[in-house]
Length: 385
Image (tube, rainbow, N blue to C red; front, side, top):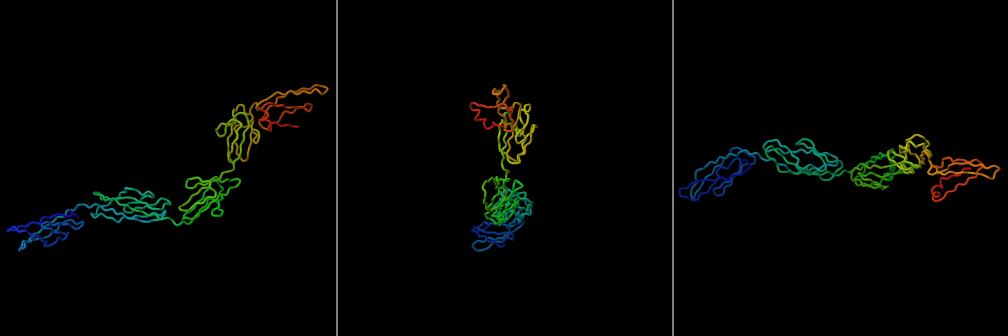
């Protein structure tokens, strides 16, 4: 046995049957002993195994007995390993090497088992030297739980507490989604990309500067979009902020009476929408077999066409029979020696650039419109001298 105690019955005989008392004569070399009446309690020294011995004698009311010798055998039994709670400190982004000093009292090799990994870092390396690496820019308290095994028995669990101290300064990193990025940082104009360290808890005010070609469209801070401009932040960790600029929006208007397809999406004419300047669009007139040409800000007979929008545009799509409605017009004059007549067909055209039919000088012409058509189409009717 090892590091345990045993009760030993001290024995003696008296011819007169008197009560005997017992006394230790020579104490054990590798343990301790206590006597209570006829019971001796022997406790071996910690982690000792092998032989030990002690002697004792008995006494009645008058005389001592002979000396008796007790020999003990302490059997080697494995001790469980011991894992200890302890604490350590490091700083943000600084790994810490943990060197375990524990050894097994029996000389058995120890194995370390992680029962609960740290929540804000990771453990690497090989026991007895393990490396704790805190997650980027984390500060505060982290813990992990472990135990030892010597191949035969296991220790109780133990907790390692890690205090990660806050840094004294943090970098501010500004990025942009465009080739442009003028930002005012605490009153100083800078260009993106931009990096600067600020003292912990400093307040930093950012203001994005828009131009005619680059319009401020928000900040991305910690994966959240903010439209505040200016925006103030407090430096309690590294900040990576992306500022978004977009081109100005332009109006693209199509006039006609059929359909168009823009980047695989079909729209009925007339159609109008806003796009960022510089947007490229593939536009297809539908139906193809009735398409004649594009007119207005683009004049082309190819279908489809590609448009790179650099300004507001109005484009007419001409198909066969391009009028919304048509009417026949007969002109006649009788105030001349001879009577003249002529016949044309008129209608509402797509764009004001459509050239009208011109009568000869001998005719006077009056166009009459009835009903609600006039309110709808009067802005498209032009007079030519």
